[in-house]
Length: 111
Image 1: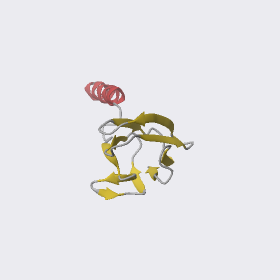
Image 2 (image 1 turned 90 degrees about the vertical axis):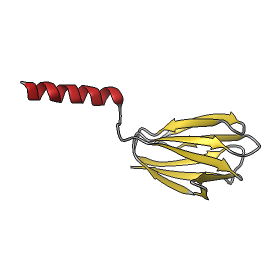
Image 3 (image 1 turned 180 degrees about the vertical axis):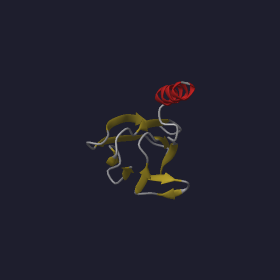
């Protein structure tokens, strides 16, 4: 009986805490580009449950959105120093753009 109780506790705890292996990744918006760890990126591979924090490092506004079936969102406009987060809850490809700067594109592959 103790084994079953332990399993129920673990399952309940996991359900309450969500994905224990989820990460929060920071993607900067700098020089009208998406930047991770100081380098411009065009694609990013993440896991289901991961969070991306988009941080505006430019002296002007950015507006991040996606119309992809995997993840639809619109973070609105935000100025330098502010950030917005998105949690990716489904596997698939997510195309992300800036509504203000049409050349800013990022493809996120959620596995």
